[in-house]
Length: 453
Image (cartoon, rainbow, N blue to C red; front, side, top):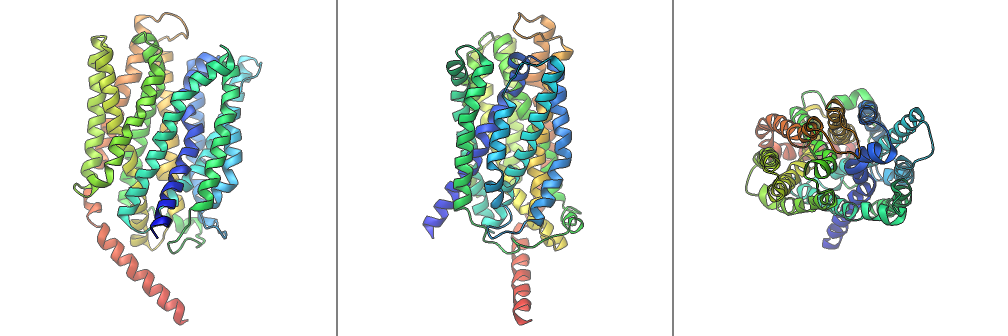
């Protein structure tokens, strides 16, 4: 039994590393790639990111519907690791491939490849979240599995940030376009291998994993599901803040702090958030999840303010202190929604009698991550364009102000807004033990009635 638990935790970790090997490059470097390597304007890059997010507004519910209809000998969520790993990896390679084109042609190609990669990421990442409720019914084990998943996420982010820019420079011999086209296939192969490892070892064990649900019936799990709505609103705002922060970082360290070499170091420090993530199961045994969640978002705001004082004094140590503290706070704020989404699935089943894990996690996790990532990349891009940013030249005082707004104050505002709905979560958290008891009784009764027929 213990061996099965360890295998499940490691395999769940692998599923997150797999996605990050491609998506991390997009999250951290796509905006800079578009403007400084691919050669399109900041305004066009921001518009591409927004259009892709509009597509996500449609594809997340569609994927959720598809997942609810899925039946296979492998379960509902697990088979998608097998079916989508190669298409997703290939789309990631195409997203960072460049070919001789006119400016309009570049924009169309960038839009098409990023849409394809984004849609496929929703399709393969949503099962990573939705499968959690099928792996175990224990709320405590779900928190532990989420911690392992976040360890995988941060490990993947660390690996990419420590290697990608150096690999691009080394393999491209100074030609960044060529470098990205050679590096991305390497990450893509790792993505495929890790998804296949997760597919082989994860098992869906909870009841109702094979039930087909009509789309209208799936929507019943959303009606009156206030804890899910809280998770949705807070997560969306969190991802806007987080992605805006890291999207603006390359511009900030190059042009404001005049330390472009710090970009890779700063991005790699994301791994520090593992310290807070590893403490999450311990913290959840001592404090309410609402309290921990709220404190982490408040800490994220404080971290942004700290970096403002570092900018004002041109102090690298103060900026880096705020940057590191921000990652420590963000680690918890990032992890908790993934674990409690499964609790909101339970709440929806308890309230409506419908268990729609695919739909709730597709919209509550994948859509929030993707929409937040798009807006978090688009808003800084538009701010840079509004403040007259020109790539690879000395920036004016106006453009420097735009970079600081993108890097410091836009994330601070979104973190603060993300905190507000969290304050109302505690009443629903207190209901979780009784919900588990009621659901267990219902399932036992349904199994008894089914056996007597």
